[in-house]
Amino acid sequence: MNPKELIQNHVIRQVYLSNAEIAEIFPPRFDYENACMSIEGREFHADLDEASGNYFWWEAISIEVLLKTDVKAADLNNESHQLVSTARQAWFDCAQANKIAPERLAVCDSNRFEVLEVWLVSDWFYNKLGCQDESVAIWKGLPLWGRTSTGFPIEREEVIELIARF
Image (tube, rainbow, N blue to C red):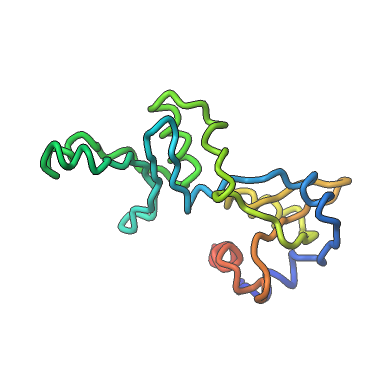
């Protein structure tokens, strides 16, 4: 199925809601893929391992550490972490390994998704979008997708192209 067919078969129509209604239906979500988080004086990142297509987290080494030791020694302290399938899972692994409450990862407003458009979608598509960590919600019994981008055709959304391939 190509992206255009996917949209024709599974995206029913745009739903126009007030900003207050959108905020109520779609609570703020953390942008796990583009996050850099400073917590308790430590800086953490999650990155994509392009060779495997999986994610991992790492703690940044401060310049003070680099000045005190050579880069090789610093790299030994900054061990590689397990690869996981989503950036979200990498962040939750980071929180667990560093004894940080997971909800503290979502405190930075600059790392939040903002829902810009709301679309009524099929149940099948709702489930597929949810598996891709998209903003989805059931509102008044209706499956909704909260699109976090605007200004270009839906069939060009990365998530749409990904779902259409499989």
